[in-house]
Length: 344
Image 1: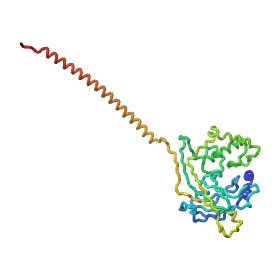
Image 2 (image 1 turned 180 degrees about the horizontal axis):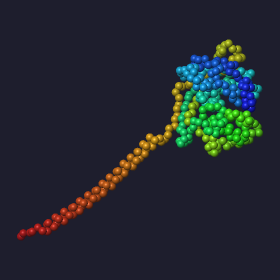
Image 3 (image 1 turned 90 degrees about the horizontal axis):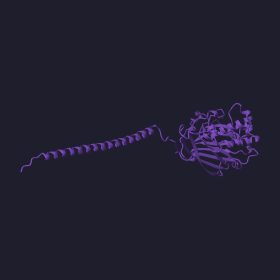
């Protein structure tokens, strides 16, 4: 499939599910979302055609169908009814169903991290809880970044937002391309114009691919890739539940066809979201406060010690002067007593 995709994309697209046959019904809140222009097709080397809702430009994102007031309830989310179309599967397929990926807008979909498997004959409920994490760039450690490393931009397949996971995969592919002279079908392909000159890794490349995989976790490779964590991470935590389809579901369909229908309901389980932000332990305000506080403490101690020493010196001088004055006065009293006449 991966080799065929590189040589003739149109053939591979026609081999997969077509939206007009696969999508039976679609509701987003109270709006109908059956129109094909709302979906963007992407070809995956492993799963074939992938249709993404609300993945076009900002103009479509601002459309009224995507901007509506919602509540945390299944009937206020996205409801898809899909036809599994068993005739579309290759003889080597081992299962039938759909791979539903929920991810942040602008981020590349990851079948390993974002996927939920929806099986025909059941309603799959996907409750979402959104989480947001922010990190700090250099010089804070460990640093974060929002842009792709310059050496990897040349190989990017599209202009998706930066994530550390995608960066590591693209860097991994770049190292395989450099050392093995091929591209792995399990990693994002290059978007370069000369990509057809680089073959898909076959059996003769497996030893080389395994060697590259073995060094990916080494420190010098991490320094080469510079795939720091993302400064802004948006996660969608999923809670799944399933229900069997009722007998009167799509009553105009035959019983055999109902067995191949699957319904997916995506909704927000709660309208609140978790936010975790990294803040600098010391900023200029804290540094100045600490500096002034430490200096103030030092100056206070210094003045205290200075006046304590001055007090001791003054007390000593006062005691010395008083002692001399007392001795001098005692001496004058003794002399006066010796000169006093005595009469008999």
